[in-house]
Image (cartoon, rainbow, N blue to C red):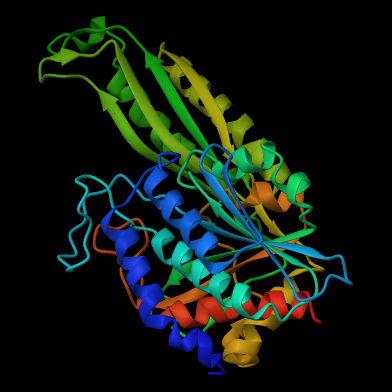
Length: 388
């Protein structure tokens, strides 16, 4: 694999950064230690400008090429936050913070982009400006949206933007992406069911919310299987069912919590409509009442068809064209990078993590073997899009 010698030489140093981030994970917007280290290193690298506090705790580094005849400005984004999980890896660099761990590889994403920034600041073999973006709160709090709303694109003149995520199950040395929808929209729902509580020995005098809510769970599965075009994608998952507190009482209320994933705007609208109708109608059949609270969290991550080939070509220049899947199957997970792609054209790409534990699993650890590949991808993307 054509890894630049300088990038290869940085492997051990960047791995050390990654493992330090892993030992001290931070959640959501509370990434002050991580952001502080990132900002300090960007300054050490000689970035032309380093700005903190974008989108509350985001960090942006500006690296100008040897020339700026093109006037082009591209953004590269990595996420910094961890997850509220207890790590079980037992590794020497395992989390030292109880109840928090980097279970999604954002420590690796941050380290790889930092390494690429060091290389780019040293070489500057490009014509234009690279904007190095470190984002907080990808895990559920829409840090990308916060940075965009804080003027990220306008303030730094970003014309196109790119993101990358590790992919367990995709072999090391491979990349995957596709034009169009790549990751799903994420919606959350909460359904409150109210019946009539009573003694468990006299169910005929009650409206059993556990029975009603169980029927709602079953009925919700008909939305995808019987209401959605089989050639389109949707997921409706109930993740929590809470009702009752003892064995001989029929509870007055029950609650469901779950998520909806879709890749199409019309399907998204329809699933929301049907979920409310199914829940309310099923409850009414039993004489109960269902109240649905529906929240749209993250939009579909859509790769711009005109810019996706640039990302694919940069990856191919690192691992070879046969190791880049340019028509990858969409993933029903969500990514708030969608907000950046709504603001500017660009593309999101997956880098092979190998046969490791899944992201969001307490046994997950980022694969340090792929660090030079990720750094090389970022470097090649800048040097090709901003060719001197």
